[in-house]
Amino acid sequence: MFATPGATSPEAILQAGAAIAATAGAYYGAAWLQRRLGGSFLLNPVLIAVTVLIVALELLGISFASYDRGGWLISFFLGPAVVALGVPLHHQMHEITRRGVAILGSIVLGSLAGILAGTVTAGLLGGSPEVVRTLVARSVTTPIAIAVSGRVGGLPPLAAAISVATGMIVSVMGPLLLRRLRVRTPTAFGLAMGSAGHGIGTARAAEEGAVEGATSGLAIGLMGLATAILAPVAIVLLRLLHLLP
Amino acid sequence: MTGSPKSRIYNTALRYAAGLGILLLFLGAGELLSRYGHVPLPGSVLGMVLLTAALHGGLLRAHWVAPAATLLIRNMGFLFVPPGVGIMVHFGLIEREWLPIVAGGLASIVAVLLTVGLLQQRLERR
Image (tube, rainbow over all chains, first blue to last red; front, side, top):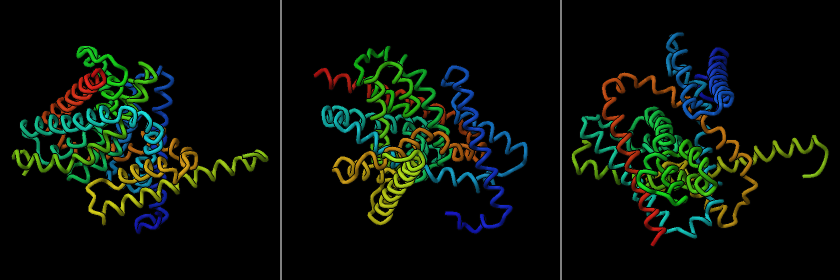
């Protein structure tokens, strides 16, 4: 893992170390700040850390490529982190087998509706192929969004930004919209929040109750899986609709 | 898990290391399946499915991987900071295409909330 040609000189190792230390400082500093100020979701640590680091890199005239010599050592662990989602998925298995058909049906149709609504809207408004392809992976959890968008020819960093923004919007707008639609059962509320707003939506759903939180957490993994399976299908469909070249 | 405090620390460290090793093995298996098995899914997602299946089938005990898995999941936000910083490469694109990005994102959010919420509620009340 450390045997990349660029990382062998002492300068390169120092550079990578500085990038990792700055990222950790920015993220855990922001997380501490969020806890201190009462845990508002608006103080999302990812959003704050990303903003602080971009401003710092721009001011210091450092390119993303040289920052990423350290950064990739962090994001490498996104792979095992996605695999790790199998553990909570396993713990939720009884819930899936109990109400399997209903849950799978609404998640699969929800995933398809989300992909089509996002990509068709963006396509009709003149979005470029990269943007349309990126939106295919919109509502899934960020690490899966990064993996899926890369796979279907989108832009992984844009997918990451959209995913974080999505989670924050859902945690504000989700409960309001769901109440207006008279969605009242805890399972339906939880599944909708988790499938639309992944981890950040789940944190908000858990405030409503334990069942809401658990079903929302379950929806993260299932939505990621459904979207990963449906993404290549959606690309074919978008080509047929002439929304992608 | 009994013994001196020191051996307990070693045990904990070993559990994390072994757990991470298992997760990496499943990631590797997922990547292999994705690349050579012509399965159109990211390797990490396939690894997640394989891990769930192995846990469910009793091939793997949950407590072997749970400490490492929990650590990674709790700190997932930290892991996607570097890809997030990568957005700076695409500032020009966002400036040009902010409307399709924002409108597409919002349309998709509403579609998911509507479909999943209403459908799930209707299916439950049958």
